[in-house]
Length: 217
Image 1 (cartoon, helix red, strand yellow):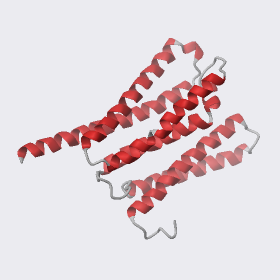
Image 2 (cartoon, one colour; image 1 turned 90 degrees about the vertical axis):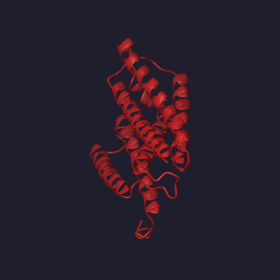
Image 3 (spheres, rainbow, N blue to C red; image 1 turned 90 degrees about the horizontal axis):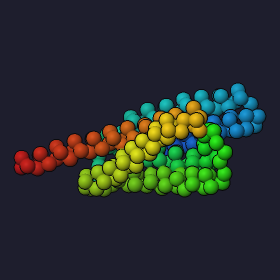
Image 4 (tube, rainbow, N blue to C red; image 1 turned 180 degrees about the vertical axis):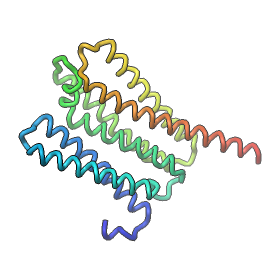
């Protein structure tokens, strides 16, 4: 970072983006360690490490926002779209990586029934879908046509909405089988759905304004 201190905005933004992904991933590992292997590292050290990650995560989010989440010479230069598309990319990467790395831990923290290897296998398949979809969010900023980006956002919004509805329905329909931790998963998919909705709304407004402007000319 010292050598990049006078570099371009997109170079610094890339570094902050990598740090954000890395810090969130480390936090996942630390939380997993504190719950599954609590005697591996002293609780006080784990607490210090978590707070260190939280603080640096906040700093890097602020720095990234100050640099307008710039990727480079993208076809889209709108700051709000840059932020929302990259937030979608971060969420899909972290959730996908978590389901790939800790399927048993995540599943057993949410349900009260006995699970087997088939459940872990399906969870890992879901993780691969989440993880690989980050590519679309990252590359969509380079697409020239707004209507193409709308297709991606609509797809993400539909998937997130259906997943959220299914989670909430199962929480009440099979409440005796779910743990309290299931609400954490519901809150995560809720935040993802809200991000997709905001991006969809923003793109729709921009497209409508562009069409109105074209009619005037």
